[in-house]
Image (tube, rainbow, N blue to C red; front, top):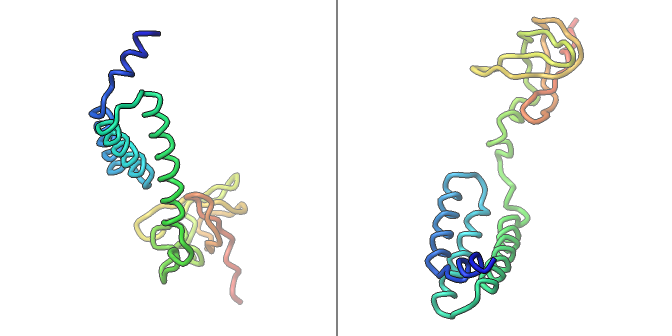
Length: 155
């Protein structure tokens, strides 16, 4: 146990800066903005360790505190009312863009599942039991599965 404590105590500010760099690379590779704030917290701890000699326990505590504070602050700043208002609310919600459209079943709906073709994409659908070649209207979305109902015959 003493070896582990000595190893951790020997970690200097360079390790925090490397951790910050790794977290910022994660931010570039993965969706979301949380790794950015964790990387900033690690960089701040690295700077603090460079300026002030502190035990590894204080370093970890400072990192945890800064990480939590930066994530909470970023959520408050990024989730301001009115920021989500747009003239294209479904721009990045491809499945939601199909609500209201009419399509023809390629595969029958059996056991609640079937398939349609919209443009150049095949979509899995769920709805009541229906044979292939039935016109259906998309009324909702469940994940990436479109919810459909049969189009009533005009007559």
